[in-house]
Length: 618
Image 1 (cartoon, rainbow, N blue to C red):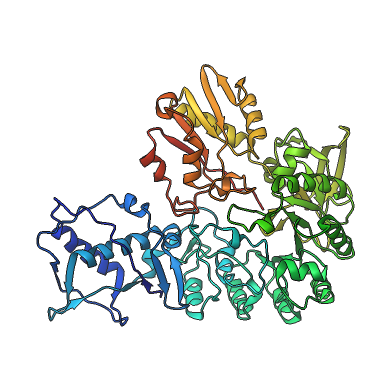
Image 2 (spheres, rainbow, N blue to C red; image 1 turned 30 degrees about the horizontal axis):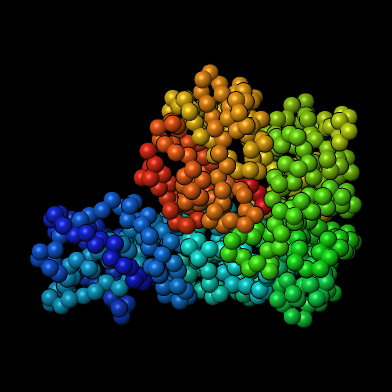
């Protein structure tokens, strides 16, 4: 098991007026039942007694959540197994119980002298967990193998200019390391992984990088397959792939592999990826090997506008890929932040406009579907109704291939009127054989197509990792219209709110405004809607923390919302409620900086209602 070393500043500086010796006695007893205390030599500690460091010093016991949410960015943990320094905020966001124990133990160290049976003073320098069952995490969402696979992706064999880690603020609650997972650590995580009961062990959230940069990872993947029959979703730059690994991947199917190819130009590849001796023939041989083994794969490209003639380069790469059989190709708009190097960022807004135009131009040119990431930016540009399932393409040899074209809109599935993409995906799961689609093409002409549920490689099913492509159809992303509408109306009713602020990112405003109209609201002003004297004001939260061109609510943090609402004077007296997407909180209710949603209760005199919406699929 892990030993968590801690070096924690004194968070209990105000020590007055509270007699705490009974509290400490009970705390020590409870602590020793759940954790194994260690001294500086990693020997277990048995505490027999304690005395106050200063008889006149009294500890003012603060609210636990206030302590956890206080500024503690200087705290570091050292994991004994792989000797990685882990920021306190990463521990706190992963499992706040560990953070709480560390803070309390630090308070004990600073407040009392702990003694062994001989009266010798002892200092606690670390702790490990005694009974793993006490510390298992029960997940709210279905626990898949990605929970373990992400733990393998800690190091990288490239140094991409657009790497998201380089653009991450230093205070993000993710641990970053170049050291791979150790055998002991993997065994602990693996042995406590229980997908049937939706439980896993405590393990720190590391920033995921390249899985094949470490040779042993392929053996770890084989072990994970023994515990889970769910499909693996693996993203790789392909540099570490060889025939032996590809053969092993075939043995542990089902899986989807996404290759971050980026470019087939030697000079551009070596510049973008900072990898020398690029061999185009090796990459193309890898694609052929995957196809010979009928291993499904997608391709990931990045619109790297800082290289010369990047659109020509994209087109050249797509033309070569047209001779192969990827299930799909996604083109990523780089997620630049205020921390990304200026020479890499380019002109964010101009790049977005260029890529919208470019995608419209080339989307029908290839045997595979091509889509932009994030798709919502493109959809705002290309359609008036973001709720309707817009076809972006079809996987080659899938049931729907050759029957639907990019730009088609699905109106009905087996006679059922479809209201949004999520609805279509849900209904598609109920279809067993014959499919009938009523579609509307770009010229608003309706037609009906029929097909059966069969297909062949590269189509291997409707799920490709985190992507769901019903019948092989690549669709626009969307929120559930009925669900969002019901949640908004429920929140207003529950709080009897007359004046409500609805936080909505720029990507979703076009959709949300249509939802309000369909719910019976009428437009009062530009961003203000009214129904039976109940007013909703739409406010766009700004991504100050990540900044740059990242505009989705999934990437917000608590301080972003605080700043976005700071311009509204007398907010508590003028408004009754704030409704916000809740997709930026993890299972423990912490954002990407390790701040919990209790932040709003402690800092605003107005209730917040968080809609448990799905994240946008990247």
